[in-house]
Length: 157
Image 1 (tube, rainbow, N blue to C red):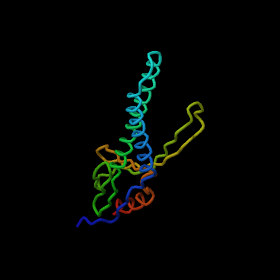
Image 2: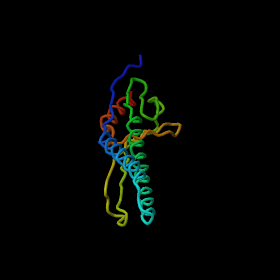
Image 3: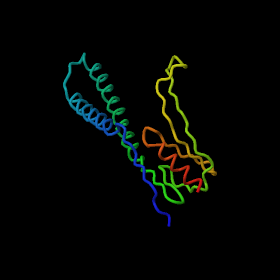
Image 4: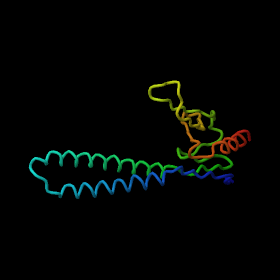
């Protein structure tokens, strides 16, 4: 009875490339850390060695964090499944009768020192429930125009 009308798979915009880049950088930095800690230096050079090893360690830590969180983003991007009575988003299931409002939101990222200069714009589809829970779908990850048009048809029914 609650049949699937449409499924919108997420668009993986360069996340696999980011994971590979950060992962390789992490491995290279860890290997550099291991090799650097085994190199013998003179007594006068020991402070420089420790400083360089500390910088390599922090670089590896930052790169490992970027790898992990890029991977976590890809795991959390689940398909949007629209059925006759409800829809599934990455934030849970919402019944069409529980939707209070659905609208587009334009997020503008401005320059650091010039507040009037817009660097990047991203459009979001925001689906608000009566219980004040929101589902935000980015145009970078989903085809929000098709989702919105199909959502309008289902809500009007």
